[in-house]
Length: 107
Image (cartoon, rainbow, N blue to C red; front, top):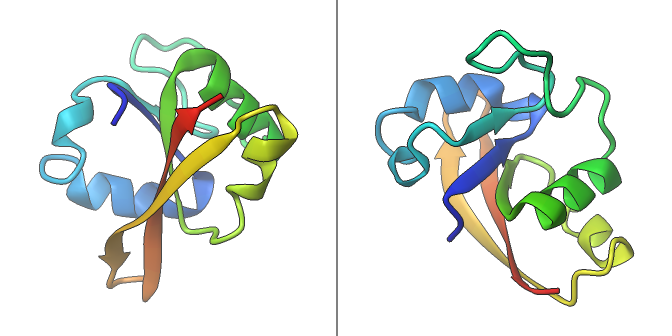
């Protein structure tokens, strides 16, 4: 588990709901796709970032990735990651969908 996490655009509502519990291990190192940074700076990952761009960002910056997209991990291999760990991290009741955590194991 990394100290930083990227939250995919499709589950930002979930992240807001669980901010104080499940994401506790990431503290203030939560990067939301398409959202301004806490200091007011533009998003590190623009709203329309592709899964491949997110995978590359996570690889370059040592981030885990939370998403509702069950195929997002594929793009990690496209950017040179050798091994990923995929966990069903949570279930978002409001949207009735799983939340997956993608962690880089080796690159």
